[in-house]
Length: 623
Image 1 (cartoon, rainbow, N blue to C red):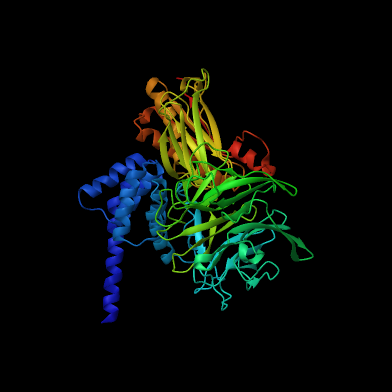
Image 2 (cartoon, rainbow, N blue to C red):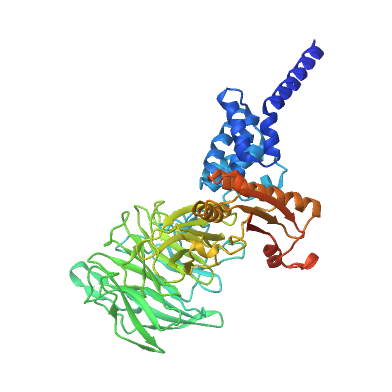
């Protein structure tokens, strides 16, 4: 009985395949000869008579894909995967979704592909880095936040500063002693250090005994060479306090002190002349050149509770305190300043609009703009404060009581920069507003588009981790294509000068920029479509013009294979033009393979020479 069922099943499968082949025979022949537009019409007839299946849907989608009708391709790939779990269809669907900028949906299709083809290199690459797909950077998120293992869950740990030698200094109340602060009823703070290892782990924290007293010590700042430290200290330890007889209290203020590293020990501790029994001076931060010290104080002349101030340093001499003003300070409380190597000041504020409690802000000292909240990736409705950033080692630390006690968190900067495009007429330098700018990833998938403003300008915020290019189009002008140079955070400005389309026509040909194809493939890409649209416009303006498309490959690979590939590319180019309304009678195609290289370098071609040889020519046919 089982044999009969197996035989019947096999018969049905064969019959089904045979029927499918008969139904699609005409369309398949058109597809196989690269006549995608005619093939589309034949496959569509099957969908209209309800004779379509997963095969027809996929063929339709592939046809649309090859002529860069991405929206229609997406529609039919979706239908195909709904009725048949074919690995390659999932993969091609993912490619289309990327071209549409729907990267989240593309990832889901790649997940399905990887399940069916786990050993395929494309699946392996996807699973090893599923979130490779570049997105526009979120300017509101500048850091990724992580916990670190050195926190004491029951005590306060805060004020972490990482030296250029990978030593993390911080203050903590973890050393529980019988003596406590009368005001906070908490243990006194001490200064600790921990070594940051190459793998990011931290050594067991240890006290710096020569800096600690029986009272509060810290927080602190360290010089660029790691040999000078400024730190806060309770005046009680120095006998600097005011007696309040009625309450039988000795009221001390925090002051700032300087220490020098000598033979591995901190010594030569001296008090700064700005210390006072009348006000607090605390939370120090030293500039990279060691000539400016920022701090928090409630000294006279401020705007509120505590403000951010600075003093100049010249050897052992100190200038007068200068308030940083309204761009930083408010009538509320500001504290925990930290200055970076490039003059960006991070600080905590209760007076500025935030998420609740202390929030962390940044202020560019070289800018005229106001301070900016670091956003929800760092700030919460609890107290978030004491942010420091080591620009050299590209890692930051801040403190927060979001978990109940003050803990230290690591902040990994998200490198991002602004890609700015300024578009003008190449001949007159006239500003071109309304030009369409598309930003593409390194596989030429479109991420986003914008139009230039009245100043001929537009911009995209992008991540440093990915490669990008921009495609610029405007009616009447030649398309421009630019690669965005790599950046470590510095903005990139691209000055695009567009040439008029009529300058592309010579006596013998229409000159287009190179038509890019994916490696070993023949489907039209976004960049290729943008370039070919110029030819569509020219052929519309010149209705008697006929064009021969000649496609060339580089010399890599077998000559026979290159000839076939170039023929497919030439035909795909013609089919795209037909899809845009150009009459088939006005177009012809010829694949040249590697027979007529532009640069005759043979087997010793450089990558640049290969790129020159991979080209399409658009010859004007004279009758």
